[in-house]
Image (cartoon, rainbow, N blue to C red):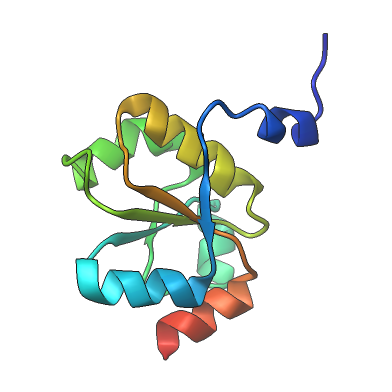
Length: 116
């Protein structure tokens, strides 16, 4: 049976913490968490979020542990639409990370919040 993306996202077995870019940046300023951009390199290059570390969704599981070895370290994930960020959050939770948030707003809002 094929499952569309709406159903796939609805069936993520973890509760996803979704927040705005402003909320994420307020938290990062106090907890020194990681803003993680899971867009493809070309997307990140054409519309960069300077405060974010870019690890594309396709290689996340192979690369993230190099940058974040603490399962409790705060990670804030964003992409262009929120879909890849939600899927990435699920994968990080499957890997054992337990302080993961999804930033659910536009790239423009993320840039504005990180530039403030």
